Amino acid sequence: MNRPFRLLFLTPSAGRTGSEMALWNVLHRFDRSRFQAAVYCERPGPLLRELPPDVPGLTSPFQGSPSRRLWAKMRHGAGIRVYERFIDDLSHSFRPDAWYINTINMAYHVHSAKRLGVPVVGHVHEISHLLYQDVSALDMGTLVQYARLLLCGSGQVRDELSVMGANRVEVLYPPVDLAALRPDPARAQELRRQWGIDDTDFVWLMSGTPIYRKGLDLIPAIARLLPPRTHLIWTGGIAIPNASFFLVQKQLEREGRGNVHFVGAQTTDYANYLAAANGFVLTSREEAFGMVNIEAAYLGKPIVAFDAGGVREIMTPGMGIIVPLGHVPGLVEAMKAVMDGTYAFDPAAARARALDFSSDRLVGEWERIMSGFL
Image (tube, rainbow, N blue to C red; front, side):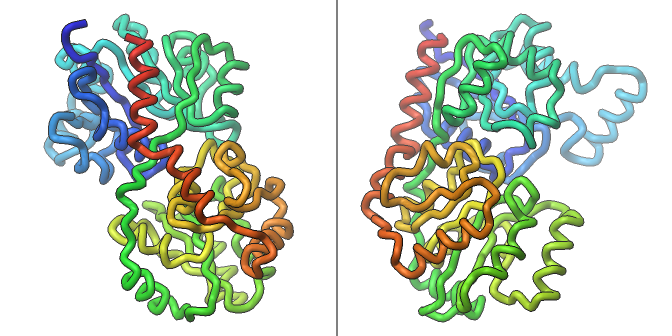
């Protein structure tokens, strides 16, 4: 092929989730002489404004300006298949060599690709079952059978896809932009002061959308068992806080747990929150990989995590402790072992392991895998 291979990426919301951050790291670094890209998002999230200049980004006809949404609704009301026609027109105008379906939440697009006769690459970041339950068996089965290539975020995901009958599956760990982690030590200290945290206090950082899958409901139980002068800081927000989040907040208030802080989504200060912490704790019930583990390791933070999936493929001796899934007392005992020095953390080993997942290295691996698809 004498021209770049064209890929139309379809992704949910251009939000700061691991699956979409990984995609954006690829979009910023792939070899322009070999690949060309356009991106379609169901909803216009913040990352849509951070696309490279040569990568056009489009959203659903039911998103955007009021006039655009009204026009789409009027046409839909008149019996026109507005959504399907928009995707078809987008594919015809960009003339992709393949569609790249990012996450199982977009699996339903495989039917349109199959109808148009366009090859598909699927990228599955999720592990069963909490996320799989929201995807129909028809959509997932068709994606697994029709896709010429499935990329996945860990070995566990690869095994699950193989059980479902996938023909060609390649593990590609999510590329992490480690170069973007440039914390300001003075700002990190300022953040600790803002939350009333002394220099001798121990701070555990958590990150992600505050939901059940991430172990939100376990926070009160963890907080009860931690020793004094230990703080939990949760970075990551949710557009519309749900009743579960409301309940946890009220539980913490009722028990007077002023050492638990929900600071919402962070962009400019994210690296500073990591730097302000003494360690990172992963409370997720399911986590196919967990990019934030790599970020924490790169900044020399010990990790304590439930055995939630991909984390066991990340951790090497000296990086931290993995605890049986859902065992809160065991998690807290591991946290205490880190805090009192019983566990010998090796920051150099953690940083070295983190470099295995850098964007510079893994985007090259993405190009190698995709070259076999051409």
